[in-house]
Length: 441
Image (cartoon, rainbow, N blue to C red):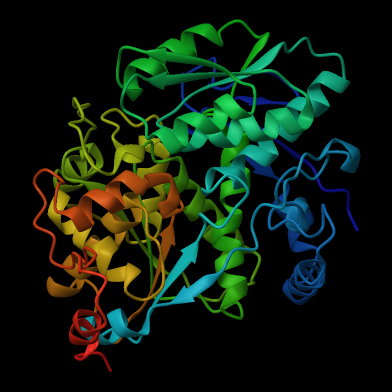
């Protein structure tokens, strides 16, 4: 087989290229974000049936790195990375959970959750961070003077970065917006030994600072504007189609904040289609919280421009972002996949999450945004009755326990809880217990 190679290329098409082992995040010619460009001719030299066989045989093992949902498909991520530099915690290989009752209520043929929160640090960020930290480990082995990796985060990115950096023995620095991250998210980078800076600003302010700090090439930028992250996250789309016997659903819906994951989803689907592993392209919907919806506003204006906004406080705190770095990449993919953008209010996202929980999930508020968007798109007729829909569930609900408790206690501001289920308080009396249970079954 022809040796597989990849390099950086400007996503704006200006012609700039660089080695993946250069420390560079933006095109020096036009300031566009970079993307990892693979040798598609070499990839096409392997028949689609062989790619499927290879991926499925690795998926059958639990041993790392082949047992990783990312590194079991390593030729499509970083084909030139030495195996000894792979840093894996067993990411990927997450359940695709059917939601038959909600599907029936909405008139869909199927509704599924790709449970990316069932992952080492509890979110989809692990898929991209394993690639980025593995690349940094290799760079350090080559003598590149990288002192630490750094990120701005609303919670999940910091958890993933700190865990993978700890596994690799690389120092990590995390910029978090003060009092805007759940305690469960804050404690993860602390426990992993990262240097945590709690800054009196929002995520967008943290993002500006981390970009300024990482202008020093001794500190390596780990946010999703770094295209190595996208190479791991695109495997969510690949694994989803593999779950379905290489037959994609009609729609894939994903929450959108900084929009790296939306662009990654499109990259994965595009590669699957180009190499013949799938024969049709699903449509994509990106879901945003109404209080942090710059992509929706741009969509309604025909994607003419992005107007950054001051994101308001939302229960979906992980996507509380008003100036998404990956906007242009996400728009490119939405156009390629006949995509749409929808929003959810605080009540809509909270009730959609609670509705999904009634089918055995423990849904994070960001996934609630995506599920609420599905309900609205079906009601609008954008999603046809009888369509098959997959939702990317981005994090585990255990990271947002206060959200869950507040919902069922009825204490969440601006939320009318339609599915609240508070405990029934009773005296320790057998007749009272029997009375409380007589309507069951």
